[in-house]
Amino acid sequence: MHLGKGPMTDLNHLEHDLLNQVEAAGDEAALETVRVSALGKKGSVSELLKTLGAMTPEERKERGPLINGLRDKVQTAIVAKKETLAEAALDARLSAERVDVTLPVQEGPETRGRIHPISQVIEELTAIFADMGFSVAEGPDVETDYLNFTALNFPVGHPAREMHDTFFLAPDEKGERKVLRTHTSPVQIRTMTSQKPPIRVIIPGRTYRHDSDQTHTPMFHQVEGLVIDKQANIAHLKWILEEFCKTFFEVDQVKMRFRPSFFPFTEPSAEVDIQCSRKGGEIRFGEGEDWLEILGCGMVHPNVLRNCGLDPDEYQGFAWGMGIDRIAMLKYGMPDLRPFFEADVRWLNHYGFRPLDIPSLVGGLTS
Ligand code: 2NL
Image (cartoon, rainbow, N blue to C red; front, side):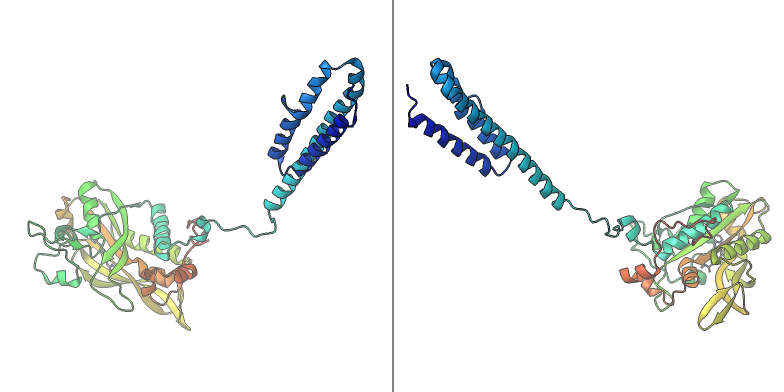
């Protein structure tokens, strides 16, 4: 019999050793390594258990409970340690992934950005004219001399061409000089030559003139409107412009004044003022005794109709044009035009519009 001190001490050593290893395991992976080394198929405790089979019954009676006891202790220690590690891991995650529900919600880019007042005003006037049955047309910024001038009844060599300080591009191989459009009217020519009347269209867009001071920038925005039909007349024009001004400036009534004027492409032509008051530097519409010029208009010149292949004895119509930048300044009280195109984010934060506040007639446009 080898029931001396040796094996007993070995078991005590092994137990001490294994329990230390279990305790020292820093995470579940390390603990699993310890488990395999002790209780796995070839683990130290499993090997000991295998020796029981070859023992005499007396030996087995004595050693069996000790070895099985060792296995149970190691197993219990591993299960307990596993729980401790899982709790510690959870605690670590809970503190690392803590969410402070009292923090204010961060604005996303779709609410942080701002709509430029020009874009806002284009949206607003598009909504107003769309409600009256107008569609929107667009065209290129670089135009032919023919579409920008000739088709609009500016005869070649005529002084009227000097009315606009035009930016010319270098002549092409045919000697033809393209221009940066000086008004959006060439898009109306394109519309009249590609669509059959009745036509009801507005054209908002960028326009260019060689001009720069407090109230002029070399690039500016216009919106023009055009109606062509068999009976379209000045009464319709006046009604459309009055409805537009009331809705755009958000007033119930506004007086308008039509002063005779000249444009090569309309006959008769008029410049239109709207009633306003100026008190303490503030302009208000729909009240007061002052007048403010806001647009030009007229009946489309028969030559323009002919240039577009329309018979002036069958069709007639009217058109108008106004500066978008200018009506934006008037409506939203901006004193200076130049910052519109300086791309200063502080200006945009002050004068810009929130992207989700979409202008609508139901909301009074600037709800
Ligand atoms: C102004 C004046 C105006 C038009 C633009 C137009 C276009 C065609 C035919 C006839 Cl194709 N007219 N446009 C008519 C009258 C005035 O603009 O002072 N704009 C800022």
